[in-house]
Amino acid sequence: MKFTSKLMFTAVPILVLFSIAAAGPAQAVSSESPSPTDLNQIRTTMASVGIDSNTQDSLIAKLQAHQPLDSMTGAQQIRTFTEDLVSSMRTYKVFQDGSRSWIDLEKSSPSGGVAARSAMTNCSTSGAWKVNC
Image (cartoon, rainbow, N blue to C red; front, side, top):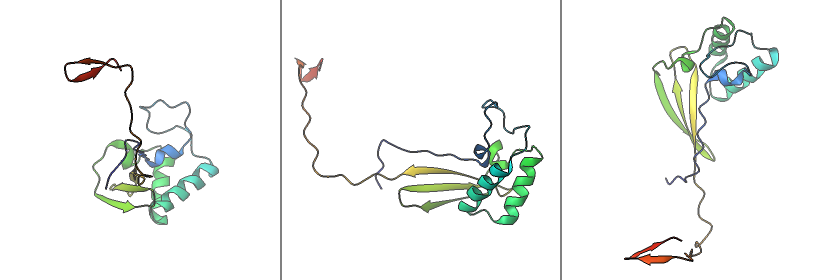
């Protein structure tokens, strides 16, 4: 599989779903509880990556108690797996508490035909090299 230089990396621990504007990057958990809208978004995202409802309940309780999820602490994952999506390959890390993080690696698009030759202009020659183009 060939990947382009335009790689899309999306590492998404569950905490990213909180809107914590005042939190610095080193702060792991907000001191505020998530709103009902935030909780719905969190549950939707958890379900979309295969986290069952019992595990969702336990992870949300952990967040509401202002405790970081294992996926947010640098804990060792207990399992990894990869899923082939339409436009990307997604690799999941599953942690002891059931939280997950994932990375999407965008697939390259097939080329649309023959590439046009590029031309170098206004170059000078130094030995066998083109310079100052």
